[in-house]
Image 1 (cartoon, one colour):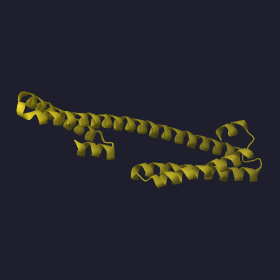
Image 2 (cartoon, helix red, strand yellow):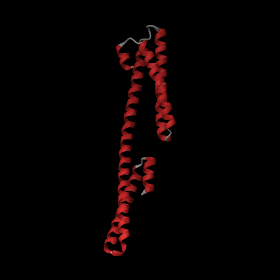
Image 3 (tube, helix red, strand yellow):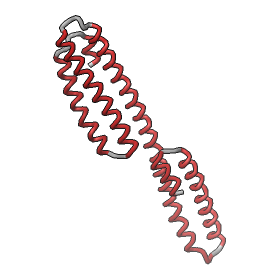
Image 4 (spheres, helix red, strand yellow):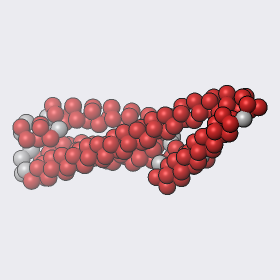
Length: 174
């Protein structure tokens, strides 16, 4: 049971969870058999006390397994949210970039600066996204911390970009 659940905890693969739950059901069955045996024999009083203690521990273990399943479900929801947000982020950057490129006739130097800034924001956002997923895959929180600090670069660039942007649609995209 423990090894299957540990595999589930490390990989989030459902087969380990299913195997672990099968094994946990066997543990409960064995405990019920032991309890039944203890109730039939006055010489096994200590076995009954031990079974009761183990049943409590198994119940606690099962509660923790349930919490793990809940946390994994929440993590999956968060991953989906992060991916959707990243797609929105990239979509806004791409739309903004296309808008800038389309109006290239006016204020060439300012447009070039904006294009460079948006490309920097896009590249930093892509790097953050890769660092985030790499951090999850390798279970390395240092990568996540680095990704979070890179967000300050994005925020700073967007503030500079906002200061030199005039079109309402572009300000909304920022």
